[in-house]
Image 1 (cartoon, helix red, strand yellow):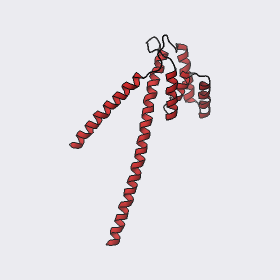
Image 2: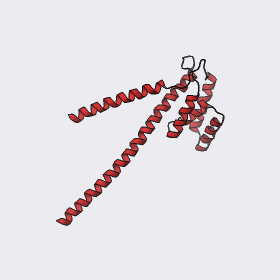
Image 3: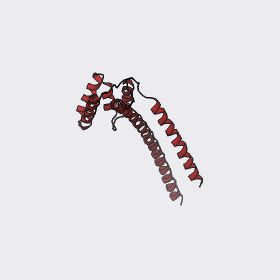
Image 4: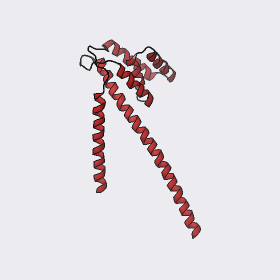
Amino acid sequence: MRIGIVLLLTTLITGCEFQQQLKEMYEETPNVVTGCHIGDARLSGLLFQERSYLTANGTLQQEMLHNAIKAKDHPQSALLLSQPKSSVSDLTKSLQYYKQQGTNPSKECPGDRYLLLRHAQTKLLLQINQYSSSLRKENLELRKKIEALTQIEQEISRDREIAQ
């Protein structure tokens, strides 16, 4: 019964912390500008490039990313760096590019809104990757401890067999 209560309280506290993190995440958005920064044609081009990037091989992906960064194309660089399989460092760079890009969150600016949504998605993906990484480290440490305890248990069992 006590364990159930402790688990319930832990879940509630964790949920509150996560909601607070989400609130902070949505409050921190890229620069807001008047007028649409990403028009329909530009959005279509960005989506086409992103699709091409996802279907390309590693070398072509690196070339596309290099070209976007070299051209100082912040929206394209941000989108290419913020893919689901991206590393933590790529996601962090992507967030910097999203912040450099001016956006207008109004309904009349679907391209800008898309970038804002991808910015939020990238933040969540970064948090998930960081949390997953910390869990992997914790798991590795626990495995080492279990192995050490198993070894100690085996030594104790051998000592008992010898003593008998």
